[in-house]
Image 1 (cartoon, one colour):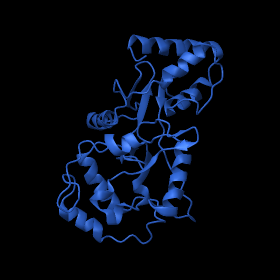
Image 2 (cartoon, helix red, strand yellow; image 1 turned 60 degrees about the horizontal axis):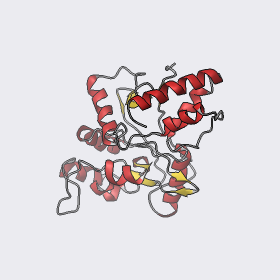
Image 3 (cartoon, helix red, strand yellow; image 1 turned 180 degrees about the vertical axis):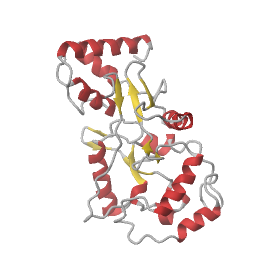
Image 4 (tube, helix red, strand yellow; image 1 turned 120 degrees about the vertical axis):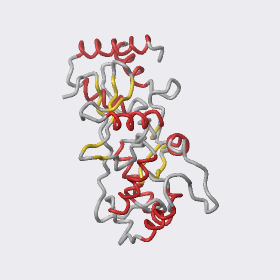
Length: 265
């Protein structure tokens, strides 16, 4: 069991229904959007910020492997579509991509032959396909050799273990999970993902955990999920439910003082 000061961030695993179709556009896109909101409880799959505020949903369907590489195949590929906030979808994830070529395709990741081979594959029923097929796994493997991103919603699994992130309450930083004995290269992959989405950035890092701690210190005794604007707080609430009131206040006071010492608040 992880220490109370380490928050393990679980994978977002959509529970697709076999009798329903999903996709990116129209009714299938709306259905998938609803499912992904349910899967994430209304948080971005990449930065964990709330994307459902005051009954206003502003999350976007996001293509793990950018659809411009092969619109014919990737646009409606269900396992390739996750849920992200506009900042992650339109800015952070796209940083580092090279400009498009004369055919309006992004350069620098795949060879023409790799895309050509992928385009030749036939999806028997793409709107019902909810698992990564062999052909998709091949181009995903190539993509991950060039871009260190834990693609959503399927994540990244290598040699039987997933690439996971944890949040350290004593350093107030995101870091590679310590539940897996990652190699140095795997840890670097996860760190680069964390950096790409600015999870520990001085400007973009979440401060919601400190707001929550301040409220607990000031007398708020209710452990409410969904009140704060980051998924990390919901996960922290789960941990605090196992502590008595005195222990909760002591832990929150420690975390809050760490935040002040780091000038995060």
